[in-house]
Length: 436
Image 1: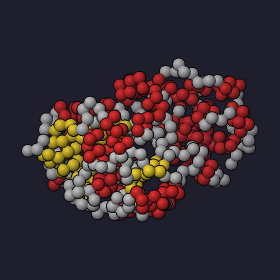
Image 2: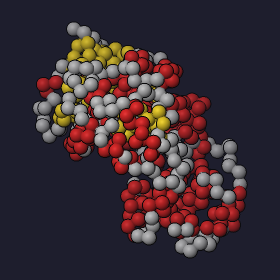
Image 3: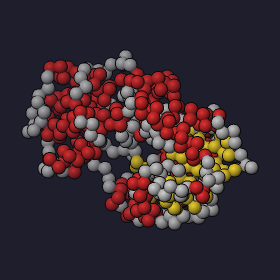
Image 4: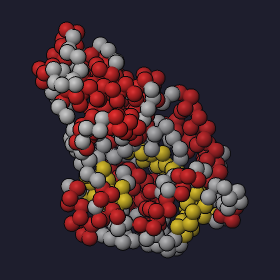
């Protein structure tokens, strides 16, 4: 496809996302079914342009003076991809290209960005979230938010049940991976140019053999703070797809027992092939349809890991369309869920045991507020230093240790963000129950 046809396709896909509320992957897939002539590079190009248009939707719309898909695509090409305005105009005359630029569009593409735009415009986030972000980041709100509006890197956790850094090194060369600066047993793949097709990790032997798992570095650091030890009894209370379940099982060297539970049985079932690939034999799935299956674990767990359901604000780099679907009532619903899950999960912690509470959100309302509220009603729990817990696991490099200490909060919890750590947004706190 020529660039004009690709641009037209991006406008069509973006319209489906914004007006029909389709997820980006579904919209691109549906367009690809209609456009059989489009190759994998064309699909990657169109998908990359749509995702970048969503990442910087507010600032682009402000600059273009219009928030329709056409304006967002043209503005992203000019200010996100650094295309000269003349190249955009020339592409409009390609076969199947969009209609030629209007005078207003042409003028907008040659104007400089407005430095006086309000924070939600410069930072590309929903306006209603302004006080929430300012509560977290204060004067750094815009630059923190801007770091959430770029393409995300990919991190791989080495599965120490099957491999080590050296063993995984050779096959990972094909995806241009480099050793993580934050974690001792992890590899890092820098974000590609958005027009490039992503490397298929599933096709490399290291993945298919279970030597590595895709897991964001922030998530890996939170799992490290759990500091699961060989022989312990562990409950992953919101296991989801099982990324942290597998990390905990590897920390424990395949000994002890990890119970993986999630209220969504379908998501939990997706963990089965990952378990087989990982070689983790100390994991037991606890299905929600078995109503009494958790009762034997009450008050008996050395560790309960709670990766609580949240607004997912920390994943905006990967899911920019979700950013614009978030509403105040959804935040309130998540807070209510977190209250319930926190209190329920705590029941399984034995005297002297610990509970790790984590979210992929940077909102204080989902993080410190929930920990403080729980502790106010649970005098037998106290908060510990989550940064030192992560360091004690031995999983962090010196740079990783310095990072978590730098971003440790006054009560001991840690918040990581794309700007601070190059990870997804992640919060974690470690609580310990008093010994009887």
